[in-house]
Image (cartoon, rainbow, N blue to C red; front, side):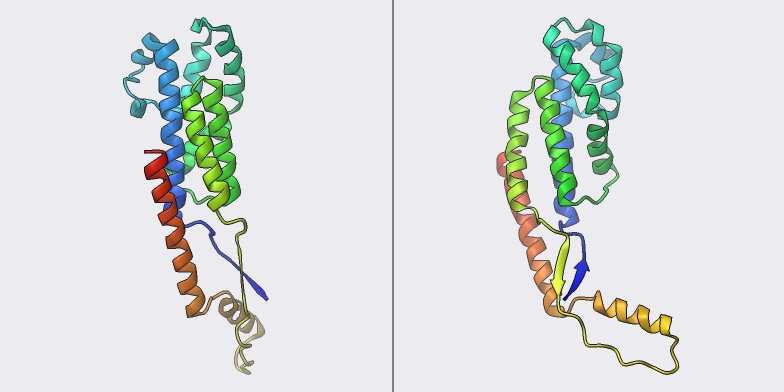
Length: 203
């Protein structure tokens, strides 16, 4: 058996998941600054969640930390700052449309949940927990699809060995028509499941 490496999650599904994570993080961050740092947030133009930029939120938080009166929130900010890299990674992947595998999406989802919890957005955390359970159940567990090897290509005396090896590798990595159609059906089913879940559970 030969392994065919492929992106296990259709890119459209990946991007919808990343956009959902980014949107929820922006709304959570905006809700936090509205509650605790309203004058400062208005001063930088954050009049709605869509105006807030996640990669700037952490610097904003560090700059205005002393103005937060709640001791609990002040302590949680330390943990929030430790999530900076993970949250920035979500935004970067969503904005620049970077392909992700199952493990990366699950890790990002977990980081987003912790972010929401630390800044006091229990509703957002609950929504993202539902998303996490859905992804754990739905996403492929492996990026390796097994297939039967293609028939061996007979050697050709006029071709150098390196060219033959390249042609063999290319043929062995190309799935037959049946496999191509099967993969297409699986991907479309996954996209439909993601679209339906996000539309119903996380509108």
